[in-house]
Length: 139
Image (cartoon, rainbow, N blue to C red; front, side, top):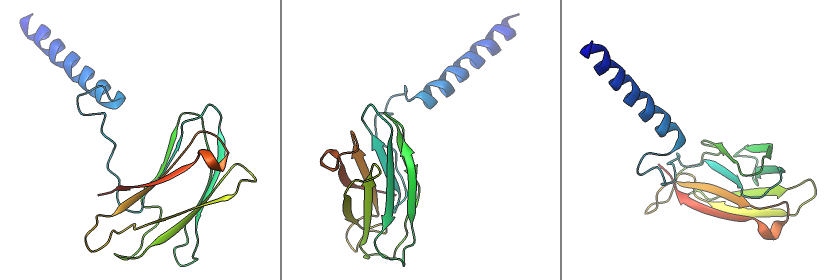
């Protein structure tokens, strides 16, 4: 009888830990996730879904993404573009169906003294003025 209670208690704890880990309740889960260099992260902080198109300026990188980002969600494309260390890649994003191009340069493989970078596009709606590109350190 004691053994059953003990096993139920362990099973309950393991179940709670696994669920809390998936939902981000555990301590330290407020940190941004680490992504490999060249990853593209698109965050829609607005209240409406927005069609987004992202591509590289030069054909040699051959990376593109056409998607609709739902309100309050994040789209992640791991290793969206790869390049040699020190090579600068320009991304061009278009929000909505007729928006202006929003350009951004980053170092997917990093530089001599800089780590690989992750490109992040954050927006609230399909207006260019509300979109912001940032580069964060990757793995």
